[in-house]
Length: 478
Ligand SMILES: Cc1cc2nc3c(=O)[nH]c(=O)nc-3n(C[C@H](O)[C@H](O)[C@H](O)COP(=O)(O)OP(=O)(O)OC[C@H]3O[C@@H](n4cnc5c(N)ncnc54)[C@H](O)[C@@H]3O)c2cc1C
Figure 1 (spheres, rainbow, N blue to C red):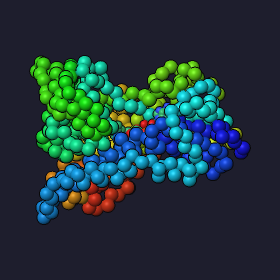
Figure 2 (figure 1 turned 30 degrees about the vertical axis):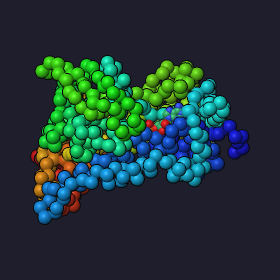
Figure 3 (figure 1 turned 135 degrees about the vertical axis):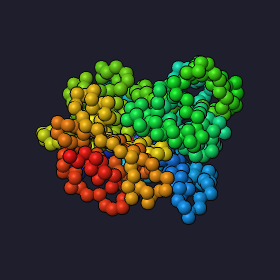
Figure 4 (figure 1 turned 60 degrees about the vertical axis):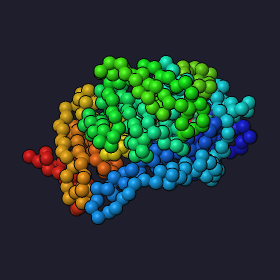
């Protein structure tokens, strides 16, 4: 296919995990051309400021706890500098040349700069016009939300970018939020030696999960010395000596956080405040108005095509479509989207299930890498009942030979949400050390609608932790 310097078959704005996959799948096995427009680092938030560095910071704490729970193994503690150096290696010191090389190897041009839609199939980057023959994909993700609390912005709080890329550990930290990012950040900050107070607006941590998950994580954080303060929110923040010292450095002098909680008003002095209070769509300057879209998240159909734009040329993948703000789900959407673009470009029908992002609907797997971990897929009991399902609940503590052998202090809990009408799994939640590794079996059962009578014949190996599946199935034997 011929192309001028400014013409591509596919233009992707945003080179995070979702955009990368959309571009790669759209051109795979063809002579189509693609460009990824990226204003920061190819690899996106996930690679440099989110999943990868956070998990690099969390893992040493998990290993240490496991070693401490094992008689005969001596574990003295963490070498914080070494932990931070390992994190730096995983984020490639914020050098994206290997990701850019991956793009080149997949015949994808990387265009550096901010992309802006200027009309149908048209994108402008730094004064240069790019035109797409087939598709434009928006994959710009989200940015951290800083709540409108008096004095908070002026205090230059840490966002998840600073917390994941910390270069010094504040002695006293307040983490604002009660979701996944806040719970994980409180976990690694405490492991690295900070005195952490978690300020949770709601009644519990991890409100979207089964209630026992948030309860167990809160109990473990409390045992680790974190002060978990629920129904508590900042009303004002004062930091007279705020200073922009750079990412992951303490941003000036002490911070006074004024709070409203169940016991009335109070104040807390800390050395840093971390805001983990949700995300906002990265659409500023994206030119959504040029194609008749309002700002904010962009709704898509199951082919990842923007709902309110005619012509099936505009696609949205990843966090920006608000279907499932997780890297693996953004990548999944990228794969579906790329396949759809390729099929439409070649005039093939979209009559195969792989052209439909069906897993976005009630089949999303997620691991929260707190200590203990929370692994879940599909619907919680509450979500299933809200959706009108008649459900049977099976739950028990994880206590099998494999769990006892893996750690002397193993404590875990598992819950299945079974659709009574079809005897299949609607959802599963596991809490315990390293239960993330147990999740994929549940995901297969949920996505494959495997009857529990068939799962009975999926025999877990002895003595593995996965034997708790047998106990769950035994618990509902007639
Ligand atoms: C602290 C933290 C930990 C997380 N941990 C996990 C985890 O363990 N597992 C998991 O599955 N998910 C995790 N997530 C969520 C995960 O990071 C996101 O779901 C994922 O990054 C979304 O991918 P994306 O491609 O949609 O967007 P992003 O990764 O945000 O990438 C978007 C890219 O678009 C670029 N961009 C934006 N606007 C423009 C523009 N106008 N022009 C050019 N480029 C632009 C940005 O620079 C960025 O590179 C975590 C999130 C946070 C904050």
